[in-house]
Length: 486
Image 1 (cartoon, rainbow, N blue to C red):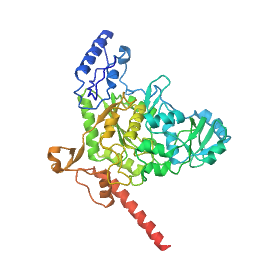
Image 2: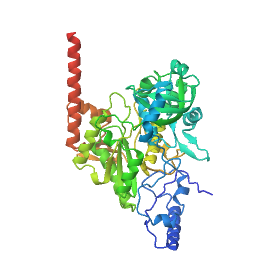
Image 3: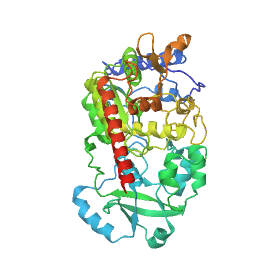
Image 4: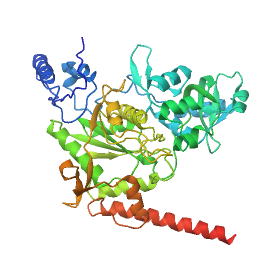
C-alpha cells in the first residue's frame, strides 16, 4: 500500500550512480527508503505531491544504475515522446495528398499549437483534441490513458472552424491544414467535429467570463462555433524565420543536450518577462541548494515562452537579446544554463495554465520545476486586483494529477533590498527596507527612460529594454505625425 502523507515535505538525497554489486545496491536502496521515511517533513526545497512518495522509494535496477550519468531523468508522459513531423522522403507525397483534401485555414496561434503538438510538448497527445479528450481536459485537467494511468492536460489544445468550413469538409475523414502564408502545414486524420461551447471553455479555463482576457479576445471569441479534432501529420518542421529558430529546441533536442552535458538534475524556469537580478538570485540559489543535496551537475533550463503574448508584454526578440546580455554579463553561468524558447501560446490562466507549463517541461526532460508567486497570472481585466490568488499556482502544482513525478520547487520571494542596494530574499522583519518592482513597474521605468535602482538588473540587459522602448516611442510618434498630416 502506498504511504499517504498529506502535504508532505520530502527530501530526496542524491545517492551515488554506481554500485559495486547488486547486494551493495540493495543495501543502498534500503538505506534510502529508511532515510526517506524518516525525513518526510524536513525538505526545504519543494512542496511534494503526496503521491510522489511511492515513486521516490522504488528501488532502482542495479544494472541501470551502473550506466553513465544521464540527464533524461524523467520519462515523457505516456512513456514515449510523440513526434509528428513526417520524414523528408515522404513529404512530397503527403503534400500532394494534402492538395486533394478539404482545406482548413489556420491562424498564427493555431500554427503555434501545431508546433507544440508536433514536437511532443503535449505528449501523449497526437493532434488536436477530439471531444472525449477535450471534455477530460476541461473538467478534470487530465486525460486517462488506455492502461488506466493519468496524464496531466490542463489546457484545451483545439482547432476551431466556422460553419462554412464544416460544410465544406462534409464527410471527408481527413483535412489539410493551410497556414497563415497559404502553405500546406499538416494533414489532420480521422477527424471528429463537435460543438464549440465558448462560454463553457472560457469559464472553466479562466474561472471568469469577464471581457478583456487577452487569449480569449484574440483567439476564442472571433473563432468558429465548431471544433475539429484528429491526428496530426506535420509536413515539415515549423520554422518562423525570425532569426530565433536556433533557440527553438525540441524536447528531443533538449534531452540530447542535457545528456551531452551529463546533467544529473535539470531545473526549468518559465518566464515571459526580461530577467532581472531577482530572477537570477532565485535560479542561482536553486542550483546551490541542489548542489547541497548532493547533485553534482544541475543544469538550468531558462525557458522563455515564445508563442502568443499580450500586447504590452516585451516582444520575444527583445527578451531573447536581453537574456543573452544576462549571460554575457555573468549574472547566470553559461556553462550551467541552457536558454531555449518554449513555443506555446500564453493564456494567462493562472493555476490552470501553470500545470501545462510544468507538464510540457516533463516532456522536455526536466525533473525539477521552479514556481513562484502568481505563475501565469495577470491583473483582473476589469477590476483593480489580481485575477488569481498569488499562492494558488504553487499549491495546485503540489496536488495536480499526473504531475507526481515532477519535483516542484517553490521559491522564496525576492525584492530590492535598499539596505544593501541589490535584489535579496524578502525579510518580513525589515519589510520597510524592501521595494517590490513588478513587471509593470519595470516596463514603466524603461518606457520613461528612468533607471531602476542599482543592482536591479545587469546594465547590458537594461540597455536592451531602454533601446526597445525608445524605438517604440519613435515609431508611435511617427505614426501620429503621419495621421495628422493626412
